[in-house]
Length: 313
Image 1 (cartoon, rainbow, N blue to C red):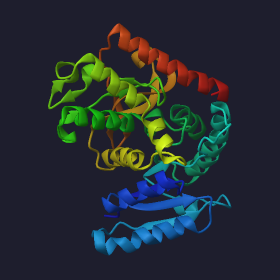
Image 2: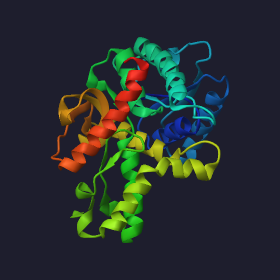
Image 3: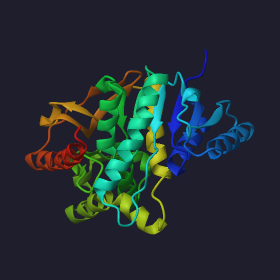
């Protein structure tokens, strides 16, 4: 049986770390692409040469897409899109939005041509709007376009909860819904430590502090790094989604998916619990929200809709 094939578009920190994790876990053969000529091939060769040490037979190859040639990606089962511009000083959110929309549009047009049956996972920011762009440009059914955000945001929350409770991260399951932005919706009521709801373990002020830190998790890392943004946790989050799909795990993870009335939201990509399997987003899990939680989710989706409207999607 031939190995699965995953293309990672964008050879920066997030893309190359995603590729490395997929190879290390022997999930698939990986094609790493970038508009630069040389670095993707160099990074892929470096990964390949680590195989005898890490005991993995997954193959990594690199390809430049500078000329618009995506033929090396043909027949991919999954395509993870990390390519895009980081936000630079003096750049508005709308500037970033339009620049990255152009990148995602160009990538998706080529992906559809070479891998018409693939599942697309979008990591490029602003994430929910870029997933919406990929969905519209691809013409794929909604189960085959996903955005990676909730897994990352939930992992950040779980890290903080584990540290606060002084327990193993394996005991902690956190739940974060909504758009991948400052008004994401962490749900302490659905977050547990060894099955015990968080409000039964921690006082409200400690939970509020964890929720606030979760919302600002990306910015905290950006401020510490000075240049660039997070990539270890984002790549791990993308790979958890890749693994759930390739292994047909039917694993419920929070992902940005196209809602068609679920949670009272229509025609928009927003983070909700999703069952991931070989078909991509196989089922949207609808949980009961309090009036306050629902209001927060509607506010978060409103922020996403503003961005989508700017792009005319």
